[in-house]
Length: 199
Image 1 (cartoon, rainbow, N blue to C red):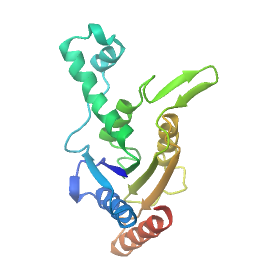
Image 2 (cartoon, rainbow, N blue to C red):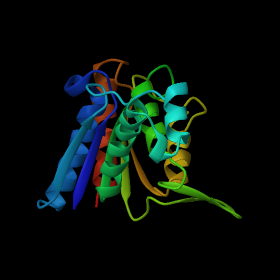
Image 3 (tube, rainbow, N blue to C red):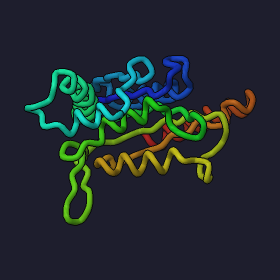
Image 4 (cartoon, rainbow, N blue to C red):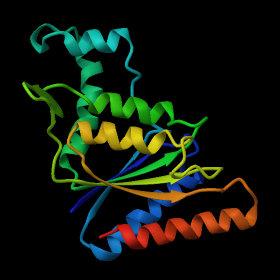
């Protein structure tokens, strides 16, 4: 088994979302001690933002790309290859201003490539990244699970499903900025989610 852990916080190892992702990975290793773990820290190595130059590079045929365009596409190629090679993905996801970090959004933009991770058919898009399990570890200062203020869960479920990642399991650590008791409860609830979700 190959586990790809993607840490999406700019705070690195100090981030609560990284701590939750680490706990998920540890639980997986407890069940699969032979597993190989690869860490992708988006805060330390931020993916390239999808700008005009990036779009132009992606839509330019490979044989006529400039060296600069080749380098730009290669950045996304590496991220896609990591996901393709993984059996399990563990995402450490903070909430920034009710949304995802720009680093996570850029990583997702890199993954969504027509003909590689999805393709369009007469019946609509079909995801090509199949037979993988994704664990999403959220860390949030407030409590938003199951409310209209939670934009992250439906977005990630939709966009990951779009590229074929339909087995997505969510772990929530919430209320972490609402005082020591609330934070302790939030981490305890995350531990319960992990115990129920990790196989």
